[in-house]
Image 1 (spheres, one colour):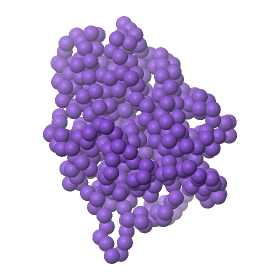
Image 2 (cartoon, one colour):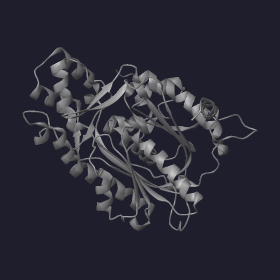
Image 3 (spheres, rainbow, N blue to C red):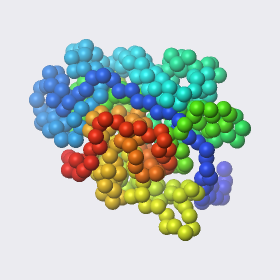
Image 4 (spheres, rainbow, N blue to C red):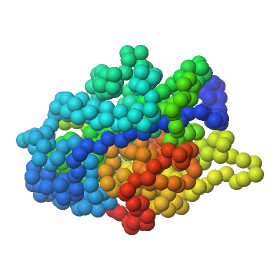
Length: 413
């Protein structure tokens, strides 16, 4: 490609979104049955490691994350995390292909059940994980357990970390629009599954040996989530949308590849988060929001000013308390705008790429809200994913769990 062609491509403006006719018609979330409190992590750490300055510091951070419980596949007495040495990557992979696949199948079945269609109508599967690298990928085993046919197109994303859910949705949306262009139906199962807690032993081992702070061990949890995306071509009888998918985009922040990392290791993968992450995440949101909103035709009317961040509910990936409050403060949002993100963070922790669909699920459980929702997540790169959704109130439903209100206005470490 010539230099002139490169410059031309770089200067081409982003396209505007017409009505896409893409709808999320089913959502499912599957968390494991066990819960890990800050006290549980402390008990596990002191069971296997001597007290040290780094360990004492991480245990102090552990008490002040704002997370009450984290959903985990292994209780603290599980043999996998109580061996003399941390589990190997081979052991972790075998465990994921059993327990992770089980969670992913459960979330997928819940999404398909809510959609109301038959598994034979699924045309594509777009999956993501950063906690397994088996070949064939875990999506193969999920598809097999669900009884999906061999003609279903499968795509597995890797390397996108906590942005995985929205990266998978973006990929699915582009596939769905291709099907629309071909005038063929697309019913796409999008699924994300992460098992991070099983790497707690190796994280604590590195912390103890190198005397380095590794905050990921205080934040991450396990879970799976799924949705069904429809392009509304073909038989739509019985399909009732939860959200219209209006627009989507992503950005990679230059020179940030060392700020969020998930590096391969003989004992799994190692989370590396720099102290810059909360600020990088917060400051990346306004430019992407300001770029995306003018391109959504249904949100822009000549007689009205463009919508502001405060006009939306926000499904923000709860990467940490400082990430959530940083975005909240920068955009002049209230805790109510971010109520689902705070709630999922508090009661389940950060399940990496599987978290964002859980936040969308929790948001509709909380009852009526603003007509439009911004979903946003951050991953390695640093990459930022964002999409704009429109609610369908007829399919929202209320949970018996009360709204958290302004409880989350207090500061966190």
